[in-house]
Amino acid sequence: MRANPRRRLNPMRRRALELFASRPNGLTKKLLVRAHTFDTDMIAGLVRTGLATAERESVNARGKTIEVIRVRITDAGRRAIESNLP
Image 1 (cartoon, rainbow, N blue to C red):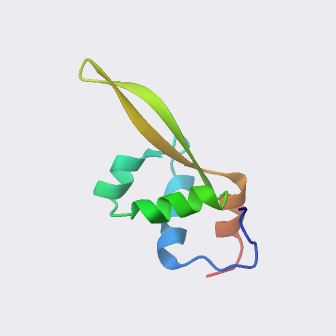
Image 2 (cartoon, rainbow, N blue to C red):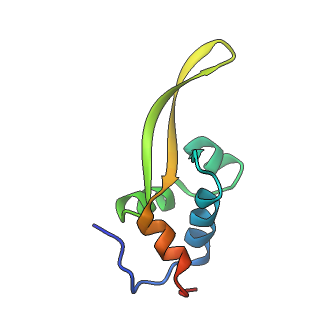
């Protein structure tokens, strides 16, 4: 499923996309859920509709390698927040 340009973004989805747009390297899913209180289903919906991507990556944290999911905005997501849809 791809983003429908006529579908309005709800305030939470818009806030998430604006946050993604402000972070070129994206944010981890864990940070989005814990610090920004986004719902995992909402994040998955943004990915499913093509407004964001989620990629698994390995990072070194305190000497340990851990797997994280990094979420980034797509061009379609940028277009969605740049439009005048509320």
